[in-house]
Image (tube, rainbow, N blue to C red):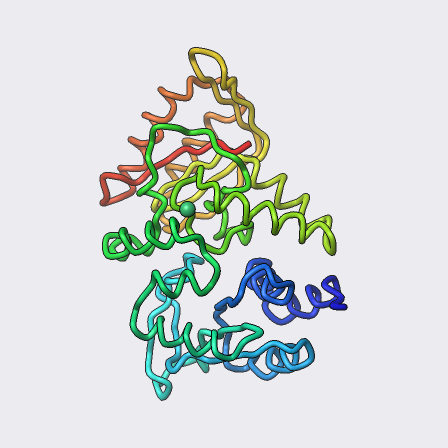
Length: 297
Ligand SMILES: [Zn+2]
């Protein structure tokens, strides 16, 4: 019987990331067949020890990776050869599974850049794998961020599918859902939330608290408030938010943050406010399609 609480603590000490730790625990608890994390070379031995003790197989990429941005997306790394001269020792993509054959296949699909087959092997729903491969070439131009491919017809979603806080190390999903209403992603997220509750109820409730948020998403920074209210059923939808968490991608632009700060604690007309927010976001971006407001409950 695996002591998941202890496993979480050991892995967190090593990886310092909720999302990477949880990905390994999902594999350990048979919630997904394989995962891929990024790990610096100096920590490999410790992870290998953990895997050996827990009967997990571990495989390394045939290349190293170096980060290309400070944004915490899985694809925000550049591949470099194993002998590449870099200041740090560099990192590897590390594949973890109970089955060595799955690891070999994952490496093969990734080398072939077959993202759809790779995603399915990692347990992502096929609707989401198709969404990923259909939009992949366009997403490559915007830091592999698929958020702007979501339709604007609705702004209210179930918090389980909130994938926009992953750069804050908060998410129940390891993949971009094909839509924020994707039922297959919802099922996976619920299953994982129940699992986390069994060994770390504090983390599960912290995730829930933060995921139930209104998210002000731009391609230059992500801001959210987990203390907000909105009258969903009225003809004019209002929004009021209080506390604000932020992660700015470009430290030079504070105008989005200032705008959001100035509108705190006020009853806003969501439609008008979204338009104003979009104007401010566009001033900080070269892209036309660069802002979204999502409400998760
Ligand atoms: Zn889907």
